[in-house]
Image 1 (tube, rainbow, N blue to C red):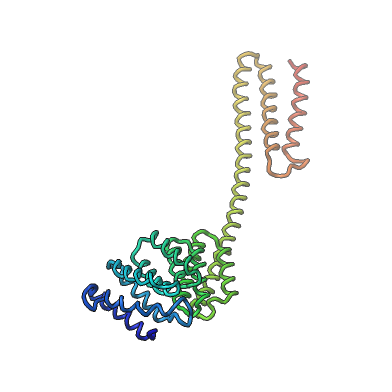
Image 2 (image 1 turned 90 degrees about the vertical axis):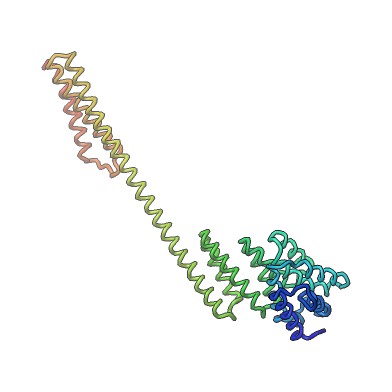
Length: 331
């Protein structure tokens, strides 16, 4: 097998030819690519010692170059080469295949293709990492995190894996804040700090601490808002009840006045002067008692035995009784 210095030099050469738009001519990108993959399959299935980080980064760079060109000729070369290979050799070429497809196919189609690679090579973190991108792009952060964490656990020395995982957590935290799920966010931050996933990355760890404090602040503020809402509801309910009681008392008072006015007119037409005077005085006192009783019934304050309204009701009742008895002898 070629050494990785040579392999990386070949990939960079192919990238340079693509940038110069030298694709199909002799010694162009297609020709170099065909030669490149003849021995690259000796790398075999994924293994941390065999899958060189620099080589994998260069494959990423190569895949990006196909965003603006038709990759079909390159994919055909890979397809033909795969026909004579076992699964371990195919895994290497499918890595190239996946990076090219990820940059050229529509999202739905590409997602299905990458998922088929994940099923075929379940322990290869590269396919998991790429699959996580599609979940993240669809705002499905929980599934994206699952794929990124799997990739990271398989290769903790890969900076791309830990960066993707951390950035996905940040996006998920923003979603939790937007949905007011502050407790979930705080618990997740605490869990990550307990697991010490990002402890070796100072900037990431410090950022995580800040996010945790941010969730705490949101929870405190949210609790204060809830307490304030509760107090406001109590005040509104109290004021509303008080207002209703006042309205009932006022309505009772004006009802008594209206009843007194209409009764006075009626009595004035149908009774002589002395009888009308006695009747109207009795009616007026009765309506005053009516208004006082309504005031007592709808009072928000504790009614005491010697409340002035109770005393006034008793006095009026006694006066009315005496007036009625005396009227018999007066008229």
